[in-house]
Image 1 (tube, rainbow, N blue to C red):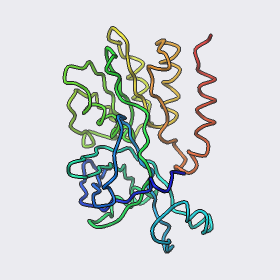
Image 2: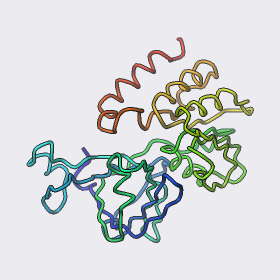
Image 3: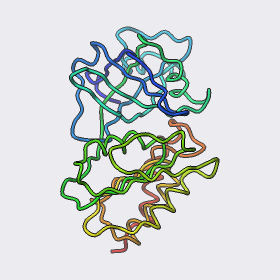
Length: 271
């Protein structure tokens, strides 16, 4: 759990429907006075969603809650990438994928109103485009798009970039400062289009820096390809599953370490 000093809060300033299944929630307020992000373009926060009909002690502190309240009353934690942090305006943008009334974070985002409070811990992060790379490959589904978009914003205009983004259909496409190959799922299997696109890509010359995130099975399908067939080294890759089909975040996070370890062992380059 994050240190107590890192638990912060933001108040909803506004929301925006940026795609049929994506809502942007902009947080502001005094709770962000000491908030800052580092150099990572995949910076993320651990959002804390209260359980319905449960009253929590003030000030809100997940550590205190865990020490004093039964587990079934603990807030639910959901991890979300920061789409943008505007330090001057003190605004934190978080884009939520929504799927009807299922889940925890999506329904909250669809109903969020100005003034609503959201507590969170963080930020963390681990990736930023390597300025020494000759070219960049970024690929993923909707869950990875905020991090991909943040990376594109950070790249110089003359960067050599290949981007594959899987969404449900053309209405889900978003503006970007570089050309994006939008892959329309159209009700088909999740991740298949991304795997096929990356596998068929003719790599530009030079050293690549690669970001592949999204559904875990999609990532599994590409990790071995990039390591074994393309010959990329570990330091050229940021590749991990943000989520796994059939599991909520609680279920995925409890198995993610073992899953990734097993996949790495199966797909690692031979010595």
